[in-house]
Image (cartoon, rainbow over all chains, first blue to last red; front, side):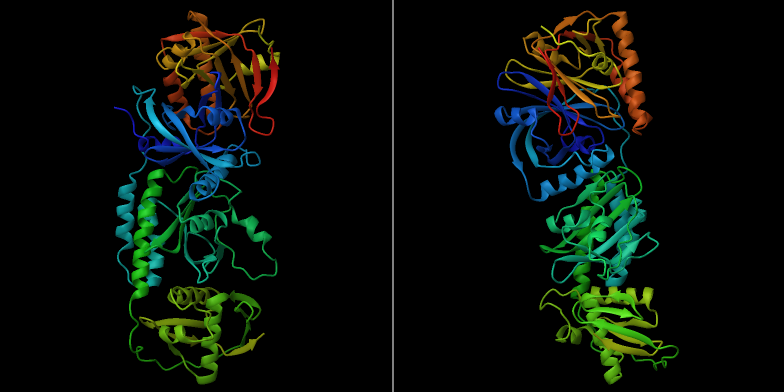
Length: 435
Length: 161
């Protein structure tokens, strides 16, 4: 029985270079190494087009090729008979291959040499198992079982904050993932902000990634999973962060200094992008094709749960208010910059954007009227807050704000008092300054 | 007519390099097979590569039918890559010396892969793939040598008749 292309996916991760044979119109053969043979679907692969080579010249004149790929772990060879279809120079497939090529290039110390110009799409006409008599490589871990374990650990939490934490915590028993981030798309759709993290010394709550930046940003922009199996500098965020304006307040992403494997999966629901689930590892080739499949399903399920949690109606009344403790101790100075809604506590950056604007509104309400109890519904109607008319992320912004406060300024706290309701606690007196 | 390989090129071709041989069949299909060792003639004008008859059936059939030959040699630890082409290749008989060459080559290449942290499994797999009893010697006189090391110089002709 001939192997299927799906069964060959472990051969198509760039661990061992493939070779591609072509021939010129006069029949002269050519053989060259291909750094990337990418699985497109059950009937197609894509080869990276990096240089205008003899292979490319031949393919454009005589569109047939044979690629030889090798199974890592067993060294069994497979030969694919290919028919060139077209070249894509933009779009999801191109972006995925570009990201993967960056990983392959870094692994082979070819960072400066490998640049993707196009994704050459080929139809697979035939697959030959050259070493069918040899034992296959040991099977990878069962991704379906991993997914089931992760879903069991995730449960069916209906509270967004709990869901966010469980979403990452469940990745460890499920997939052995120890470092992960959950990022949500902002109101403008231009950036993602970190709502929860797993396995970092600094939580990075509130850290932002621009859409299109790095593995996370590409996954968001193209709405595709992106998996890189080797350490690469091309998709690291340190560079982009250094390039950002030095005086711009920014919470650093807490990523591993040298991630050898990375995967970013979009959270999609009802045709909308909600955010991105990101995981990384210190080990090469940590995430298999099958893990990618399983994490795509996991992210879809998580997105549905998050969308459902966001739709639940708010409680009509807050829980009974406990007597407020009088703030005591040193006065904290809270500075607010209207230009970007950034908030500083005693000169230390806390938060900006929608979350900064919410905090400033709450503190002013409290200072003016003594109010401590608030509900989401009134915030949605508050003209001082830069929230869109539809599809706001108010609940996740409040979770982000509460977590950031707990980390950076425990003297100010937001306590959930019911669905869509919360209470402001102040342990120290505040001086509010708007700039 | 053949190019004269340099001493360095001859040593490179006989070192721990990945070797693949391509031909084109009578109906225009390109085909490729991994080779299992290489011997450069004393005069540095001929190259003999070793193939398994079973694994390389399609390539051997194409060469028997008059196809030209292309052979690519690449060292994984440096990415240094050469491609040699010739208008024809002839089959030669296997010999004890060639079988010994195959054994040395397989072990040397497996050791090279271990240096790249591919793991011992891959090296063992490679030796299993190359432990064959149906070796065929393919002899050709290179007519053109290309530098195919990845980078801006890839495709440069190093020697031609």
